[in-house]
Image 1 (cartoon, rainbow, N blue to C red):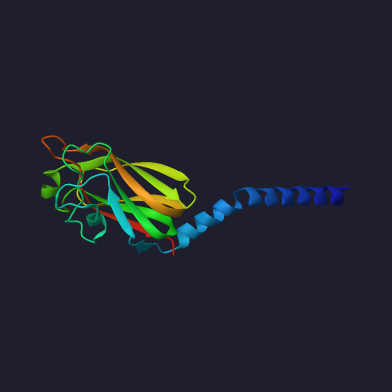
Image 2 (cartoon, rainbow, N blue to C red; image 1 turned 180 degrees about the vertical axis):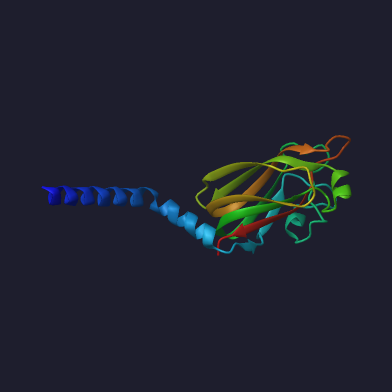
Length: 181
């Protein structure tokens, strides 16, 4: 009787493990791969924006320099967005945003900069994943973990900002996108 009970217990345990593996395995595998991979910086194939101030085009968010920046046209700060497209779909692990016009705190604080942003990521089939992030009001890079796969394009929409008013609009110095190799 004991032996039969032990066999039944083992069978139930195996069935539970099989069910958990089928239910959670694919997501768990992706999480493990994300955490063990060395993220690789990717350059977008195209960059567009809702608008741009003269001399501060959208392409400046991916030029490798955080002291040149994109800024929306005057009066277009709220809801302004910049969009990055990729040649091939990627798994985005993290996004680094350099808010403001400069990495130097004094210059940074003298102009508009983003506070709350909406990151929208679209896959090849058109499905969309939204994530909201809050940027701290300080110069320098701020990293946001995403771990979203099959991303063909992404849009960063500025929902609120610091130092706005008097014609100042929120600027973004650089957006760095890291993918899983």
